Length: 305
Image 1 (cartoon, rainbow, N blue to C red):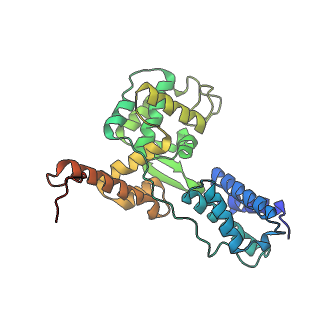
Image 2 (image 1 turned 90 degrees about the vertical axis):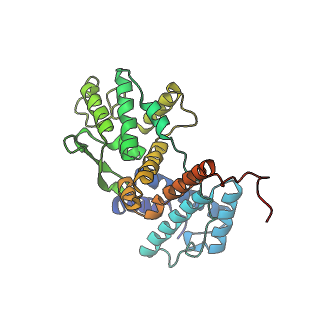
Image 3 (image 1 turned 120 degrees about the vertical axis):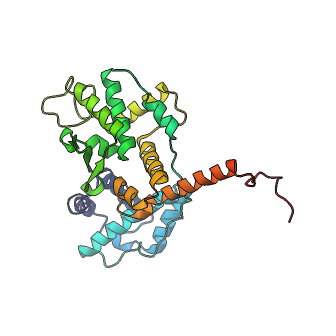
């Protein structure tokens, strides 16, 4: 067996049709396996079967030397493991070189958040302009229900249950979930619904539209968030996932219910949700340092024991 591209194409079809992975995930896997194939050829391996654990460790070390984070290395390893699991199933290879290979551990990087005052400021928009009404509805929905960017873009008008104040979301792996929508977000959606038809294309089912009357693109949503940030003078870099992080952290801080936050976010593994417990501990630590009379941790203030 050589580095036949047909096996990569079959693997990608397997990811799409059998595992129902998101389009972006499939693209990332494709890029990771193609890059690994180029490395294998550069060290004169003849086929996928020739790849050994020490080759893979050397490859990851080169990735790390180029500045690739531990998290990105883990993603590459996940793609490689999945690829070899597929090749083994098809009888192309007998084992996987990735089974006992570990990536560089990634230092936990806590996501950036907006506080409640910043959220209020970015949503304090009075304009009745078509695009502004749409943008406010999108931001309200991001923050109210913790949606991913692709989930928001994929919402159809028929997915909104107006009476029940719920919305149907298609998440990763095309898994569906129903999430509640807060009263302010629902009001913003109703205001948007009133003006949506002004530019709606024929038979367009999308909830959120571009200026051309078609389903809004992820890039367009990102650009509109950047515009809102600049217009409302919010510091930092505002992106859709920051609104999702803010939703999860604020909800967990108020309720303490990690399982419910997991379900609302659509996390299949609760370990993905647990990062927000670290965020809240960080918040509590900062509040403690500022408020407690004996909490000073500044250098030079420690008493000799």
